[in-house]
Length: 179
Image (tube, rainbow, N blue to C red):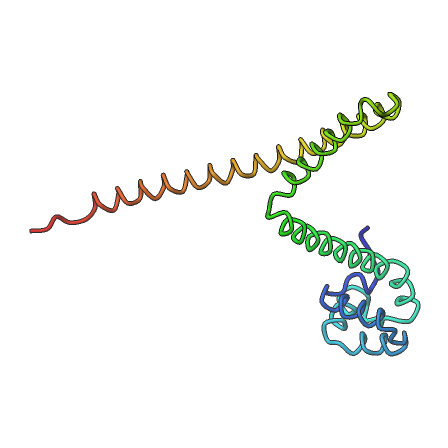
């Protein structure tokens, strides 16, 4: 959402500092004094608000809107960083082939279901097979994506090698003949 108030129009660096100070529990009165003392804030207030200073109701409005948006954004960024970190750990544990490992586990589970054909109820096996079928489709898509990424890397490497060969050929044809 686009905010229009005094604080929303301040430079991003100042809003970020303000948000961190709010997060740290700094009192509103001190925050208002700090903001109004900054030359860049004074310039925004002069150019857009007839030099009317930021007041505590402005800050309160910011806390209910812009600050809450910032907190939500920070939480989303933290979650994304955690997912990336965990993904790196999983890839490392799987030696970079996590989807291959997942497929192996799935095949082992299919083998377990097949081995149980003579001892289990048909309804139980049917339920297991439906779950395995869904997992199989998802893992197939993941592996297809992994294989496409590998194919793209090979294509990029081939293009770079071809480019390097052409560049070497050009340099050789430009080289002056030795006399």
